[in-house]
Image 1: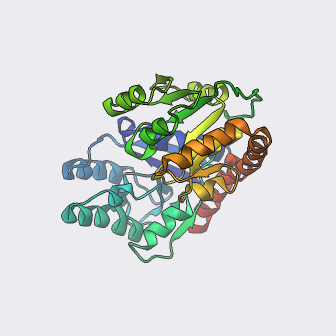
Image 2 (image 1 turned 30 degrees about the vertical axis):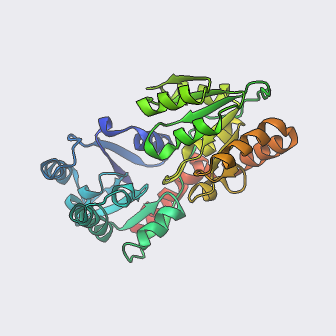
Image 3 (image 1 turned 60 degrees about the vertical axis):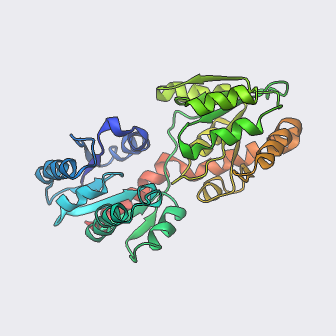
Length: 327
């Protein structure tokens, strides 16, 4: 069996590449694979047309064609062949206010791709349920993202005097401003991964939070950030999955995240859940993590157990079963 994997242009973002790179290393042990990246990174109509022409030339009836995410519209070029589409989230719809643009994206990024695909994989039940509020279909199946095997348990004595709190991501949904305010007066070091914006810098100065910052890190460097921290901070307000939860847990670090789906689903009673919009909820949870050793150690133990659901072997097998079902 041969599977062709279609990825967005790498300059659009590396998150989907990163998730599937782990997966493909396992799948290619049994099946032939081909990786195809889009030549155009834009989303204007002419970019869509050129990418679709590119994909049309790549299709063949002997292969399974898997669109890995974001470029849902290229399913239009894959009519008549076996196809799988992975949908990570619906942020492309949920954040759009203009009704005409919203309809355009609903039609070309959701409705038509789902109608064309043989199977649609959602990376969480939250994403699946969100889709079902916008379109009726029986093609959806939930398969989680896998943990990269580079993430392994590394024992570390918790620094109660000044814990290092790792925060990954600085986009609007990562809730960095509320994190900074919640940590005012808490003796800690906030390690931020991602490009800081002016309002972040203003908040850090206003609330006198000790911090350091890095960006554009390699996978190994990201892994080392988890190893070197004491707490993983992920009180996000919108996610399709939430990789930092299971990466932190696999490393053996306690994770603080939001009491929102899909973060509740992914963490499965093995992380500290907070109201991401409530500063006191975040602050009080941090104080408990720092002060209560037994509580912290129990949560870490549960987190390690939780990560067993996300091994690359299990996730790859689920995808391979889908491929064989549509052959």
